[in-house]
Length: 202
Length: 202
Image (cartoon, rainbow over all chains, first blue to last red; front, side, top):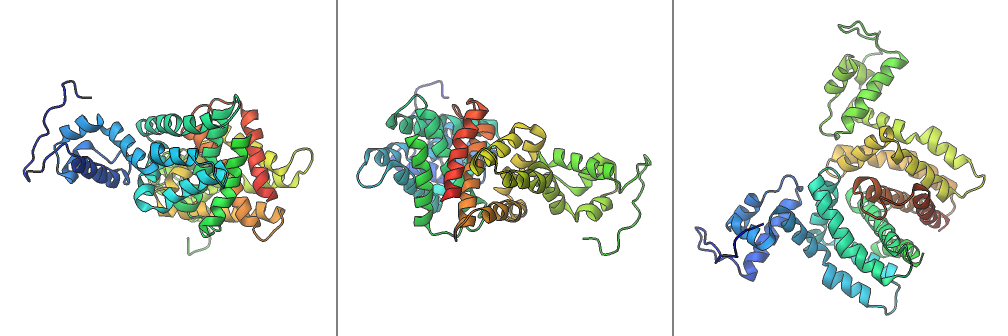
C-alpha cells in the first residue's frame, strides 16, 4: 500500500498520461492477459510494462498485485452489476436458473473466462491466490446470494450452489470431458440450474 | 512401452530386487509423493531414484509417466474395488449418498487425497495430465455409474453428479472456503449426496 497521498500520475517515455479512465482500462486489460498465465507468473512490473505505465501507478490504483487480481476478478464476475442484477430480477425463471445462465455466460466469453479460470488454477496451489479467491467468493458472491434466501444455513447452501457451478464449469470448459463439454449450453444451464435451485431452496 | 518381453528385474547398488509386489508398492508410494507436487514436476527418473529401482522397471510395469499417473489415480480412487462396491451395495441409503460418502472419505485420507488433488490442479494447465484425467473419469467412473442408471442421458447425468462432487471437494478441501470447509463431514455428505442423487435420478 502507498504510504503517501496519491501523486499526479507519472509520465513515461511515450508521454502516456496516467490516472484517467483509459489508463485504468489499459492496466486491467494487460493484467487480465498476464493473470491468465497464472497468478505466480504475474508481476506488477510486467503488467506496468505491458500497459506502458509506471509500476507506482498500479500500486496507487490497486494497492498491489492482490488488489490488481481482485480488480480483474471484479471485472470478470461483475458482482455488483451482473450478479446484483441476476439477484434482483425475479421475473419468469427461478434464481437457480438465472445464476446458472449468468455463470455459464461468463465462461462462454473468453475475456471473462480466462482470469476466472486462472484464479481457480492458481488458488489450488498458491496461498496468496487462495486468499484472494476466498475473500472474493465469500464477500462478493456467497454473502449476496445467502442474503436472498432463508434459514440459518443460508450461506452454506449458497456455497454448495456455487460449488455445483464451479464443478460443472471446470468439467465442461477446463477438463473438457464428454459428454458434458459437448452438450448444448441451454441444456447444461437447465440441468445445473435445477441443482443450484435445489441447494438454494434447501 | 517396452518392445521386448519383460526381462528379469535389474538389480541396483543396494541389491534391491525388482519385480515383486513390494517393489511395485515402493514405486507407487514414491510416485504418489512426487505427483502430489504436480504432474509436470514429476519424472520417471526421479520416481525411480526415490524407489531405488531402475527407471526401465517403471516403464516395464507401467508403460511410462502417464501409466504411472493412472496407477496412482487407480490406487487413490479404487474404481474396481471401492466404486464397484459402492455401486453394488443397494442396501439402506441411495446411490447419491453412498457415492458422496465414498468420495469425501477419499478426500479425508491425505494419502489418497493428494494425488487426486494434484491431478485436478495439473489437468487444468497441462494437456497430458488432462488427457489422463479425461480417460480415467470417463472410462473408470462415469461409464460405471452411467451403466447403473436409466435413460439416454445417463452418462451426462453421471458426469453432472461427478461435477458436483468435484466442485464441493475443491471448495472444502483445496480452497477451504467457510462455511463449507468447517461443516461436519456427515452434514456435507448428506447435502451433497442429495444433489448427486437428484442428478442420477434425472
